[in-house]
Image (cartoon, rainbow, N blue to C red; front, side):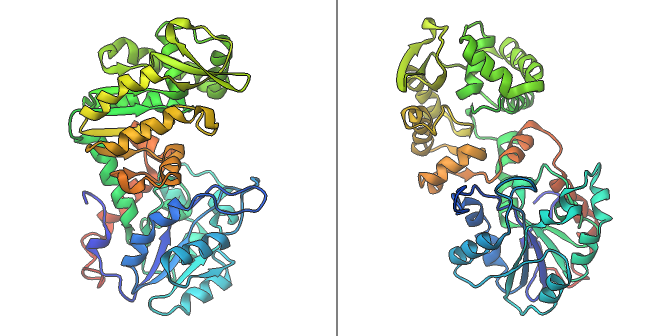
Length: 421
C-alpha cells in the first residue's frame, strides 16, 4: 500500500510482534459485560496472519476516571473465544511481569497486556508531536523485547500517545489487515469513488458532519450529500426553516463552543452547493411518548424532532438506488427509542439492498450495523468513530503519519533485517 508497510511486505514467522489494537468497547454498566464485540472481531484476520509469531497485544478501554475504565481481562477472554485459540491475560503493561512474560513466549503464543492507559505516560501526558511520544519509558521498554510493531488501532489513529505513535523509529511499524482495509476504503471514499457518489451524513455531531461535507465538496468527488438526524435539523434551520426553540437549543448546547464554527460551515455548504444537498421534507416528533409526523411546512414545533419522515425516506431511496458508492455516517434518528428507530433502520436497509460500494463511517452507525447482523452486507464497516470523521475531514492522522515515517526509515532495510516476505 502506498507509503505504508503492510503484512504482505514482511515475514513475521518466529518474530515477537507488539500488536496495538483499539478494542475500546461499550460495557453494560451494572455487570461490565461487553455489549459489542465488533472491534474484537475486526482484528481476527491480522491474528490469523500472525499465527506463527509471538504476539503481544496492547490496547485500552476507556480512560482514567470513567466508570468503564477497566482491565483488558474481559476483552482477552472474549477475543480468545472468537479466535478459537488460548490467549493469556497479563495484568501488567510494561513492568517486570510483562517483560518476563514476553521473553518467555513460545512461537504461536498470544498474550494480552493490561490497559495501557493505566500507564501515566500513555494517558497523563499531552504530546505536541509524534517525536515526543518516542522518548518515553514505555516505548523503550516494550521495543527492547519486540521485533516489530503492528497496528490495527485505526479507531485511535487521530490521536497521539506512546503506544500509538512512539515506535516509529525504534521498530519497523506495519499496518495490520484492519488498518490497511480502513485506509484503502476511506481513501477510495475521498480520492476515487465510483460515481455517482452519495454521502449520507447524520447524527448529533453536526460539526463533524459539516466538516466532512465541506472536504468532500472541495475534492469535487461527491455528487449528492443527504443530511439527516440532528445534522439534518441544523441544515433545515440554516436553510430558513424554524425548527422550534427546543430543537435549536439542543443543537446549541450539544455543539457548545463549536456552534458558531458549525453554523458558518453549514452556511457555506448551503450557499455554495445548493444543487448537491438533500434535506428532509418531513420529520417525526415525540409528543407524550408518541411518534407524530410533521411536514416541514408544519414547523415550528415545540416537540423534539427525533426522526426523519416517510416522504423523506421515499425521496432518498432513488438516490441510494442510483448511486455506485455510498458513504453513511450518523443515525437518521434517535434510534435508541424504538418508536423513532424507523428512519435509521430504513437507511440501513437501503444501503444493504443496493449493489453500490457501501462504506459505513463508524461510531453509532457501525454499532447498529453490527447489532442487526448486517456487516456482511456492507462493503466496509469502519471500526472508527472520531478517527473516521477526522480522516474524511482531511485532518491530521498521527498514527498514519507514524506508519509512513517508519516505512521511510525501514522500507529499504526489511530484507537485511530478515523480515522480507
